[in-house]
Each structure stands twice: as structure tokens, then as C-alpha cells.
Length: 216
Image (cartoon, rainbow, N blue to C red; front, side, top):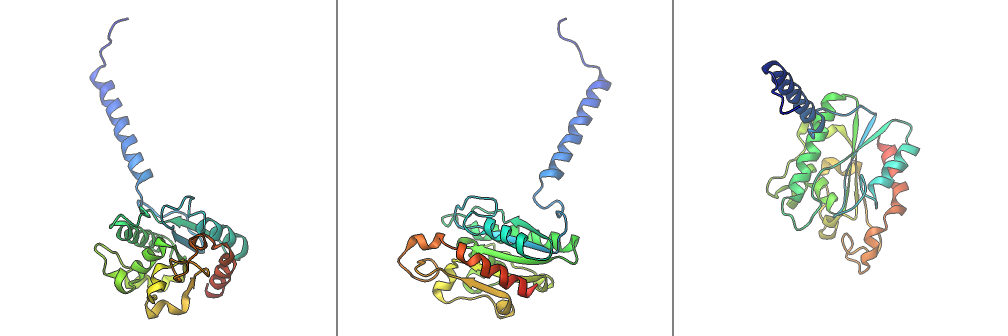
């Protein structure tokens, strides 16, 4: 039986097949190689600090489920890909770049799609950075939404927003389409003294869906 030599033609075929697999893999797993399927609404969620779940167990996953059940149009969702780590100085800039890249890709592929940008806790900071809010917009490496995409954002939803604590709000052009929710006692957004309040945003999901429905 021994070692069998592989002929040059067979070696070429194996190399070619391997190259094809590499190209296919790069296309399949590239984060923004192509937009996903179109829907009437694209819910883009930046989760909170180290929050588990696809879109985030405290807010994003519940919000998406409620929107799919209540809104009379098709809804898809996208989880912003970023570290969600407040000790990582590049966390907000990484999130802003991913969010803007996704919206740009989807907007180009789906001309009729509207966007809902939602952020919880640190994720609210990512949304603020994208919109160009005050001090956050000046962080190193932050990517802001280009002007031609501003009108594609139908709704902005903020939950447990840390910038609310210092009186900072979204730019004027987004004010009438923004809802900012803060649980009583939440120290992150309201200066309260109950840390557990920061995880209790399920009571605002219905209000967020109703606000969204009125602006779509």
C-alpha cells in the first residue's frame, strides 16, 4: 500500500477546490459582505454591558418579539457587533462603526426599508455616538451616520441611557422620533440608588412598540 504520490493534475484540482472553499467562507462570514433580506423595518440593537442574548436579554430580545407580534409590517433585527465593555475604550467606536456599516449596507440593498435604532445602557451610548450627540460624538474613532441616511431612521429608542444622567440628549433633528426610557431608581440614567432597577425595562417594551408604531 505504501505512500502514494499525487499527480500534478490531481494536486491542482485539490488546490483549486481549497481556494474555492476559502473564497466561499470569506463571503459567508464577512460581517458586511452583503445585506440580509429586506423587510419593512430593520430593528438595530446595541446591547448593554456584557448583556447575554441575541439582541440582549433585558431589552433587545423582548423588544424584537413584541414588535414582530404587534406591528402590521415585516420586521427584521440586527445585533450591533461590539465588545459592550465599558473598560474597553474602543467599545463605543467599534459599535458605532458596525452600526453605521450595517445601516449603509441595508439602506443600499433595500431602498424602502426604515430603521429603528435601539440602545440599552452602554448600547445607548453607541446610538448617541452614531447620531452625533455632544461629548460622545467626539470620542476617538467614532463613526457618525452620514447625512443621506438620517431620514431613513424612523425611530430611536434609548433604555437606561447614561447620557440622560448628565442632561445630554440626541441632536434636535432626532428629538421628535426619540423615546428615552429610565426606570425609577436606576442609578445609570436617573441617579437612583437601586442597581437592580437597571435590569427592569420589561415594563417599557409596550410603550416602545407603541411609540415606534406611531412613527413608522
